Image (cartoon, rainbow, N blue to C red; front, side):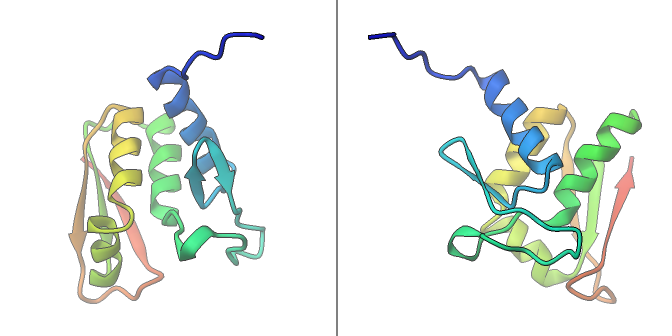
Length: 119
């Protein structure tokens, strides 16, 4: 029987990045769960969890621009999501891109609006 080796951290982060860039809404146990079809509706999310589109946007922008930090401007409800349910996804993204990502509430934004600021 072949010996199974645990995945390296680098491989795990690469898998996360690939899943986010392909539209996965959650990675659980190394398996991408759910996806966002072209229409933008989320399907197949486990327990209602979904990665916010801003995380995928930061991943794209980190490849295009050499910013020293990224900031997400979003509605308070989205910021609360990042502080609770999506905190692990945010931390994994920071580790993967090697840059800090801060979050800031904007009272005039609706739940669907967000901006990414390159610092």
